[in-house]
Length: 276
Image 1: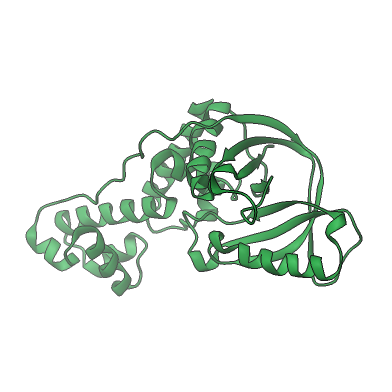
Image 2: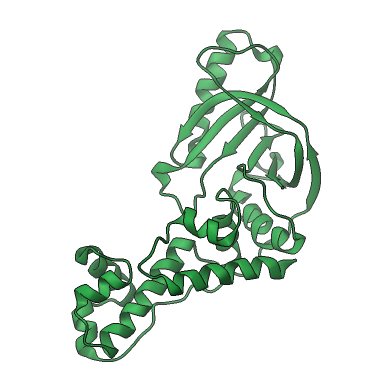
C-alpha cells in the first residue's frame, strides 16, 4: 500500500529530526527506511520532490536557525549540534539557505525558515506491468560519470565486439545504473554498459549475470530525455501504490533499438525494477 511507503518516509524524517548531529548518510537513511540502498533515494525524491541530502540539510539548518535566536549557545556549539563540526561549511550552508551569515541572523533576532521544496506537479502517466525476468548474461565495461555519457563506454564495447567478430553471439544492449543521480555527485555516478552475450568469457570485458525473478517493467517510447519522468513515475507513483518492495539489486534498462539508426521519437527503452 502507498501508506507503507509514507510510513517509511516519515520514519526517515523522524530519524533526521531526532539525530541532526548523527550519521545521516544516504546508506544509513536507507537502512532506517528498511529499503534497498539502490532504490530508497529515488523513492524519497520522487515522493517528496527533494533528495534525502536536501532534506537533511534543510532540517539541520532549520534547527540551527531556531537555536541561534532562542538560545545563547555559541555559534560553534550550534553548528556541531546539527552535524557541522566545520564552521566554514556551516557558515556556507547557512548563508546559502538564509542569504545571511549565522551571526547576522542572530543579530536580526527573528526566525525565518529554509524554503521547503514541495512535491513536484503530478508525474506523467506511464504503463507499468509486472514481468518475469529471464536470467541474462551480459558483458561490457563500467562507466563512471554522467549517465547521459554512457555511450562513451558503449563505443569501446562495440569496438571490441566488432574487432573480435562477436556480434553473432550478442543480443540487446542492457545498461545497469548503480547510483542514484539525485543523491550522487555526477562525477561519482556508477553504471555498466552491457550487451547480452551467449559465448565464452572474453578478456577485457566484465561479465554480469542478472538473475531471473519478478520485476516492474516500464516501457518508454521516445527520446531518452523522457527517462527522468519515467523513473519519477515508477518510483514515486507506481511503486508506493503497488505495495511491492524492490530487490537488493539496481534497476536496469534494455534498449530495443539504437539511436544510431532510429529517430528519437521511435526509440524504445524498457526500464526494469527488480522486485523482492
